[in-house]
Image 1: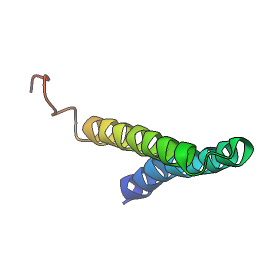
Image 2: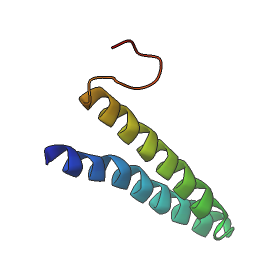
Image 3: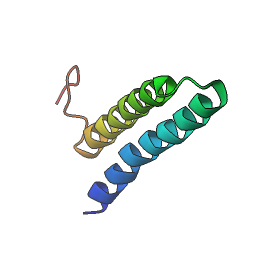
Length: 68
């Protein structure tokens, strides 16, 4: 159960930071919603990549390229 909560933060924090930073940059440069969308997608990609690595490590590294 702890892994589920950790994954929520692992995905949620980069997404939130991407949204916050994207909105800030868009307001300063008046480019709405360009940086919001770009940084949201980058935050989502970073969060999902980190979550995948955490799950893979927790499951004993049974992913591709690993010997049992």
